[in-house]
Image 1: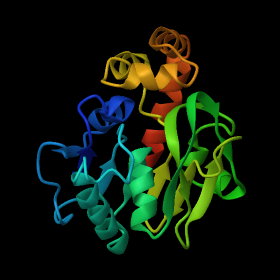
Image 2: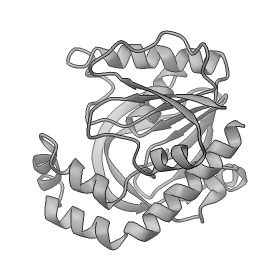
Image 3: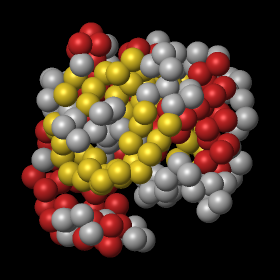
Image 4: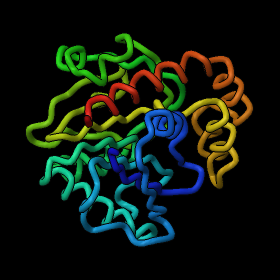
Length: 232
């Protein structure tokens, strides 16, 4: 049975649709609550790694010391070519672990069409959904690619939405989120203020999530099924 480590940054930033796929595919999942327990320093005994999203930025190590530990673990994954999936904050930490960088910018919030590059259209995971599929976003940080990384997708306002490096895949967007996830997300501390500063109310975001729920869940399931297939 494939054994997979999932690193979670905050209680409300969970696996969502990805978790459902991991259950249906009968993977042996080990979870690390990085805000409350030590992050492993090795991937011994693990066949794959997932690093989820989080509300913090990659440069907030003073407030969230575990970020350094997660970045170090991602370096191990890259060095050992362990199949890895980074989502939003996880993708940003992955980029830094590989020698890229992350910078602050204008928030991109909502369901954004993701445009695949030629390499993305040839990628077995990214191409599992149609080019231009809208995915949920809630980020204000942006990735500059690490050396040797392949750009797989972008959006109108974000130059890097998906990239591959070694055996790792980074996704800036959130295929794991569905309407129930969004309903929990807007209740988290500081989220309503963040949304309000960027043109959304919590009620509007939840309403739009419900309207798009079936299509967004289907796209997320297709993408995660393809990723599980890719790790063997």
